[in-house]
Structure formats: structure tokens, C-alpha cells
Length: 509
Ligand code: FCB
Image 1 (spheres, rainbow, N blue to C red):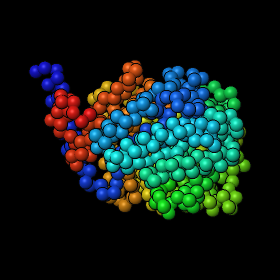
Image 2: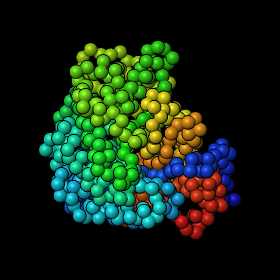
Image 3: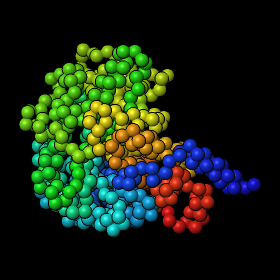
Image 4: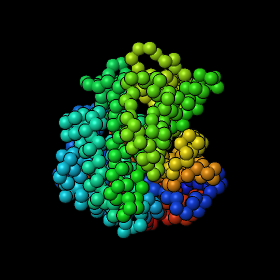
């Protein structure tokens, strides 16, 4: 038997096995539930200095050689030039929805004021392609790519001045695109972004202070700035929601939400202190954003542990923020174990204020300055997050905006990713059956992209992108074929014949 035939027999057995253990189909999900995939502007588009786009603080960060692999997203997946074929690919794959973000500095290069006609045209083109193909459009206004000019002018999210500029930017987006777009997310994961941008310094603007940084930061204060950045973000978010309600909602009938990073936390032991530490972790990681949105203020434990460093809301601000969302988006990748760590009396960063240690497993040593990333998959953890959000925050509509598996192997036969996606989708179904109001699921990522923490050293794509090839060709991974089969065939798995057919005839993909 040839090696190829042997491979297909193994693949066949594996696919059958997956089918047997899955036991659900697309039609088990509610009719109005959508399945899609995500990208974000800086990670996907490239063309960073083309057609009037001005730099975002990502360009500054990558050009200063701050990525572990020294990479930039100057070309990335070249989505600026390849969007048309990509939107077709989305439709051919059978995706029902697509989540992407707008580059603020492409649309409004000075951060405020004049709109760049070429930027406007680009997003209009994408939206029109998606509308034509009947794909539900989910736009994130801010996926962590601030115009550099606003960072230079007033230090971006550290200044309340950004509230007016962000609201004006959102106004342009609603005005120009809102006739065709009804699902809006203001900001992508402000909770973890604050920690990594202003605490550990791993993301732009790369600010941190000793001894809390993971990178060498030249400016910043890890003990205060993450809290200031989130505070400003919440005010900016609420201002955008108020604008939408006052000016657009009646006519456009859309919804506006915010997104949070959400890992599940298990107590490291069943000791009281570890159980309390686990709750503290949830109050910091979710409650930081969701307490203000649902109850109008920060969680008590944050006020207690952070003290005067935690900004406070005026009564008017609190009322503006409370209930300022139609849905919550979550990005979910893994679970962690949480271990109590005594509250230190000296200077503390967010991790110190949380007074916890993260652990990757029950045997690994504590993880230091940021949440761990390479944790083995735990589909049950997603269900637990969804159930917790229902219980703690009044059953808000939830979109799973990102879920996917990181790989350092760029191969096409990503059986581990199929396993990951299918079990996490199964876990989503379990949550829905338990009464959780989940409205959609988006895989991260539609294709390989410039990754925020690792550049091109790892990938998440359903489609492989060859970053060494100037034309950035896309190739379907097994995960793309599996997802497509799941969505199109209404079956729990694709059959081998289908995979073979696609590989040989090179149709559809
Ligand atoms: C999330 C980001 C997303 C992507 C994934 C892997 O935190 O929102 O852009 O990089 O991580």
C-alpha cells in the first residue's frame, strides 16, 4: 500500500471517530445562531502606507523590532489587495458570518477630521462583497490599533481626550456603513489588552514599569496605567453606544456590544484561599468590564485591592455606562488554574492586585507576569465561562467572537485544530441547551495572520497563508474542510470522499 493510501485510511478512521464522538449537527443550533470566522485589520490587511493610511501604534511597535520574531504586518496576509477573493472564499467555505475590524488610521488618518476616501472605499468594497453573498457582517471598531498621531498627541487611551475622537470615528463608521452593517463591537478585549499594553509591555504602546514588564519599556507605570486605560475605554464605549442609540438605532436597527478576553479559571486546590482567589480572578478579568456595564461600578474586590489607583465613576458616568450594551463578545482560548498569592504591601501591578498566581496545569510552577497562553484545550471551560456569565451578569446575549487553536506547525493536516474546534463547538451547544443566550460562534482565524504576540511564529488559520510567497496564496487546511462540511452538509463531520474530492478536483477551495 502506498503512503498516500495509508494516510487516507488513517484520516478516514480519524474522521469517523470524530463523527462518532461529536453527535451533533449544524441544525441542532438555533436557526438564528451564526457560525463564522474572524480577522482584524492590522493582522490581515498589510498595505500599511498605501492609499493614505497613516501609521497606527502597531506600526511604530513592530518597526522598533519589538516582536519576538522582529516581524511587522507591512504586508501581513495582504488583505488590502486580496479582499475580493477572500470574501468569495468565506462564502465558498459556507461561513454564515464574518467578523473583521476597521483600521481607524486608514479611515481617518489624522485620528479626527477628514475621512480618507480610499479607506472608505476599501471598507465599502468589503461590505458590499459580503452583502452580495449574504454573509452576516460583524464589525469591531477598535481591534487594538490606535492611530499613532493620537498616541503622540495625548497618549491615546490614557487620556480622556480620546473619548471624543473615538466617538467621532464611530460616528463616521455608523454613518457610512450602518445601512449594511448591524452588528457592532466597540473594542476588542480591553481587559487583557490593558494588562499586555500597559502592564507587561508586550503589546503597543509597549508601556510598563520595573519590575513588572516582560519587555524593556522606556515609559509607563504598570501599577496605574492599565486601570486608567480600561476606565477611559469604558467611557469611550458608553459614549459610542449613546451616540448609536440617539442617532442611528431607530433607522439602522443594529446592536452594539463590547468584547472581553475570557479564560476559565479552576481553583488550583479546593482550599478556601484558592477558591477565593479563583473568584477574584473572575471579578478582575470579567468584572473589570462587566460590573460597570451591568451594575454601574467596579467590583468591590477591585476597589479594595487597587484602592486609590482605581479611577472612579461619577454618578452621571455610572448611569451612562450601566446597560450600555446589547451583547457581550468573548474571546476564548483556554483554561487556567488559579492559586492564591498573598497580597503584597509594596507596589503592585494588576496581577499583584488580583493576588493570584496562574498555573497551566496542576503540576506546573506559577506563571509570572501575564496569563499563560499555551494551555491545553479544555472545551468544558468554554461552557463554564458561558454559564458563569449568565449567572453573574443576567444572561446577556453572547457572541463567541474568537476561539481557535494556536499551532507552530504550518501544515495542512491540522487534525488537532479540527478536534479543538469541534469539541468547543460541542461545548457551545451544551451551553445553549442549558439556557445560555449564545448567538454566534466565530473561529479565530479565518486564515493565518500576523499574530499579536508571536508575529508569524505561530498560526491559527483555517486557511494556510504562505508568508514567504509574495502573492500570499491561501490553502485550505483540514480544519477549513471540516468546518465547511459541518456547515454545508449539516453533518457532524465531513466524509473522506469529500476531502478527497476537494483535494483532487480542487473545486470549492
Ligand atoms: C486575541 C486577539 C486576536 C488574536 C488572538 C490569538 O487575544 O484578539 O487578535 O491575535 O488573540
